[in-house]
Image (cartoon, rainbow, N blue to C red; front, side, top):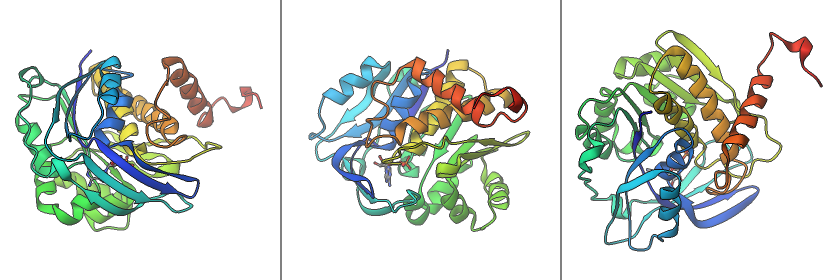
Length: 308
Ligand code: AMP
C-alpha cells in the first residue's frame, strides 16, 4: 500500500449557509483531504499553521495515520477563509481570504517524503504546489485542485503547474473559467491540452464527471435528506479518490472509476454537518454501507430485483 502526500491549506473557516453558520471552525483543503484519504491509505501532510492553532486536531490526525512531520508551525496567524452559500449550496461567495502564515511559507519536505508515489496538490497557491512537487523524486500519480481565487490571481503559475500533473480535480464553474469555454466537454479538452490527461469535474449535488484516458465516467452524488454545509466536499471527494488509488497502489481505468465513486461516498458524509463534523467518527463500516447505497442508486441493469 502506497501513502499519499498532500500539500494544501489548514484553516479556520467562517461559513454561512441558509441552514446555519459557524465561526472560525476547523477547515482547509488539506485537512478535509487528510481526514478523508486516511480511511484508505497513510497520509503525509505538508502545510503550515500559526501560533493560534490548537494541538488537539493535530493529535486527532496522527491517530488516523496521518504523518504530521511536514505540518509546520510558524509565527503569526493560521490561514482564514470566510464564505457564504445560497440556497442551491453551489459555489460560495468568498467574503474574505487571509493567507497569513501561508503568505511566505516555503516548506523543506521531510526526507522520507521524497519517494512519494501519490501526490495531491490541494487547493493552495500554485507556486507552493510546484515547490512541493519539485521535492518529490519520481511520483507515479500527481493530482491538483485549485479554485477561482488562484485562476484569477495566479493564472500563469497555475498553467505552469498543470503541465506537471496527471489529474486536475476542479469545480464545474472553475473548469469553464480556466478553459474560457461554457461547454464542459470542450473545456475538458482544452484543459487536457494544458497537461493533465485526467480530469475530475465536480458538479456539487449532481456528482462528478471524470475524464479518463479511455473515456468519460459519471460518478454520482447521493441525494441526501439533510445537507448543511458543502464546505470541503471537493477536498473530501479528492481524499476518497486519491486515497483509494494510493491504497490500491495502481491507477487503472477500473480503479479510477471505483475511486471516483468512493470520492462521492466520502463527500456525502462531509456535507451532512458543518466543518469536519461529518467526517469525525466515521467508520469503515459506515463507508461500506453508504457505498452500497450508491451502487443501488445507479444500478439499472438489475432494476427488477431491487426492493422498494
Ligand atoms: P472546497 O469546499 O472543497 O472547495 O474547499 C473548501 C476549503 O478550501 C475551506 O475549508 C477553505 O479553508 C479552503 N480554501 C478557501 N479558499 C482557499 C484558498 N484561496 N486557498 C486555499 N484554500 C482555500
